[in-house]
Image (cartoon, rainbow, N blue to C red):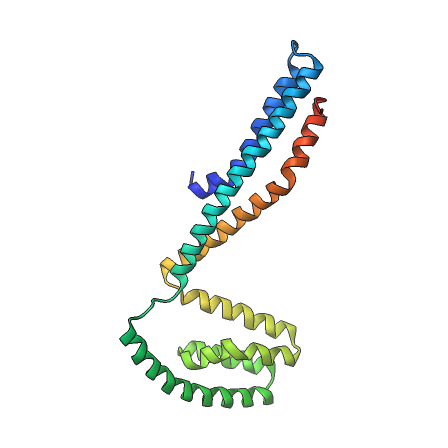
Length: 210
């Protein structure tokens, strides 16, 4: 079993063991009721203590792993020389792209939302990265003002799919694992909220509540 999946089911396994142990105490024919309640309550407190420590440990570990994976999604950091040369190139490109952005923004005001979406698709088909970047950074604001929800949703879906395609295999794997980590964290947060009342309900169910 993959480690993340094993971690995900730990709370369930921990709680099922607690239920079995409580049932065993409740079914014991030798123990007096008071002893049963004492043992069951001790089990309950032990469960909550162990779970709290384990949940904290797991959450910290998942946080560290998620941070590391996020760094994998961050572009390579260049050397100082590369940064200088890149800054010069970026400045030149910025001037050009700013003029293109102004041109596109003016066009967008005059055309329909459907035409904006169609022009974005054309830029994608041509691989025109300057136009694509401008569309993905600014077109959504214009589409919001056009008040055509279906076109806006189509644009967002296309943009997300396009960005996904630009990820490297390693980045895709990192993003998928981040999503799985977040699901596990959500499950642990849920267990953290329901464990104590559910444990108390279990004691009541078997008639061994304090």
